[in-house]
Length: 137
Image (cartoon, rainbow, N blue to C red; front, side):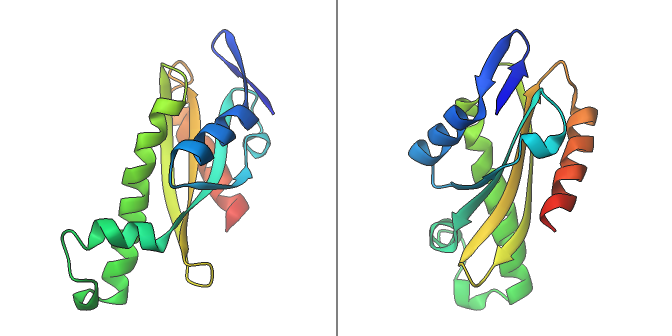
């Protein structure tokens, strides 16, 4: 889908390829169309639990964490790692990132990332994220 980003036109497929080629994330779905806006990029991403475990093991013994603590660590860490994706988006981008699910059957954590030009504003981007979250739950 083509997105109007300030005075630029961006193909969300190009961004999807950049994410998959240069990060640990896999694009589950391009949600840009689901944002109901022509100026928002949005993706449903997943990251493998083994990758997250490598980071967590630097600070904790995984066996000592309860399942609830591990869940919180996975979601927090997935969101933190996703902030590194900012370099693949145009300058003047603002991001909203939400981890929403630990999928034990696929052994990954799912997140949504929404990207807009800074002129759109964080409040509008948060509103869009609320809509996107309801689409995946």
